[in-house]
Amino acid sequence: MQNGPRPSRAIPFLAVAAVLCASGGADSYLLVSNGDDWSAEFAQRWDPAVWGPGETLEWVIADHPGWTSPWVEEDWDREGPALFEKPEEALPLVAWGLGTWTNLETADIRWTVTGVQEVAGVLRDGHNTVTTEAAPGKIASATTWGRRVHGEWMLEECEVRLSPMVVADMLAGDVFHRGTLVHELGHCLNLQHSAAHGDIARTLNVFPDSRGHPPQMAYAFRSFPEPTFDDAVGASLMRPAPGWLSTTGAISGRITVEGRRATHVMVFAARMTGSGVEESVSAMTEADGDFHIEGLVSGVYFLRASSMIRPDAHGHWVPQGAILDARDKVLLDPVTVRAGRETAGIRLDLERGRQGRDWQPKDR
Image 1: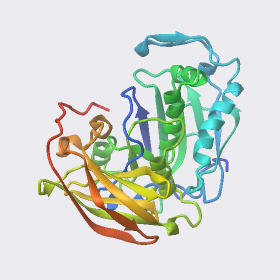
Image 2: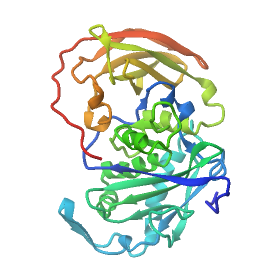
Image 3: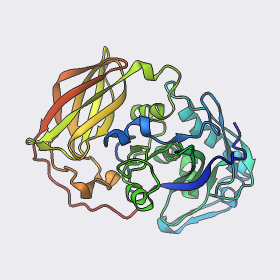
Image 4: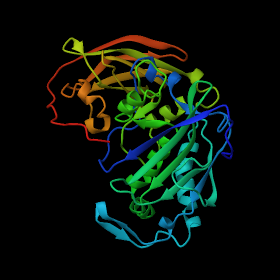
């Protein structure tokens, strides 16, 4: 579906930039629990007038000299020759990145890149674009554009920018930077950094929920060459494939540390199968220690609670009293999840003992 003129019923207002810095990895997409405002029910989605269920969202490669000119990345002290002779040669790379999300069987994500087009840049112009351009301090970014439709914020456009250095590394087979493209496209589903935007949202007072948080699914920074299991759950909650939600359930409960609330501690749910343990789906506790993990297929799960592995991926919660020195603990009693139901009342008490971290959130 081509992004065309927008109906007059909506008032454009919002642009959110999500930036992947060179801070390295952390956990994958984290479904952050912070009361009902953080559940998938309240997450911001695409305007169905732009990208409806079962429809294909079209992308273009920006006709930008970054594809065909020698490049210099002063911040990273690197330089190199032109990436391509012409921008069209980048089509397979972008198609691969889009395909990593389209291939998710549990999500209704249909993306295609249609060709090269001259566009206005990272501006709302009716096109979802991928371009390469050096930007100080950034290796990649995604900018989502939204507007309020019938009183609800919805997305309508996304622009992805990759530095020439990242593209050069991708062409050389670098796994991390191939994952960078996947990561930035995840932003275009409104999977946003868990460390970002909360303060901006409260300052601008633009999001209509009671806590002042942006209605989005949140995640950390690590890049993979394809979406992880955690990624797939987050994306599927945002755009579920027909019938998928009816096959899933949820787990909720409370984590404490020596009897007191475990503020912003990570909780991992891993399903047991006949061949072993699957990858985990993760969440983060609220300020009062409550957690809620949704999008879980039926089965038997083991839970593990842990302090943040990479606090710099979740800087928004560190100044709010996040527990960083609790020892990991596994709930020995397995938890059964049934489709369409929530297994509630789980309790797990942790002990302190992990060495704390002298860490302060970076400006973003």
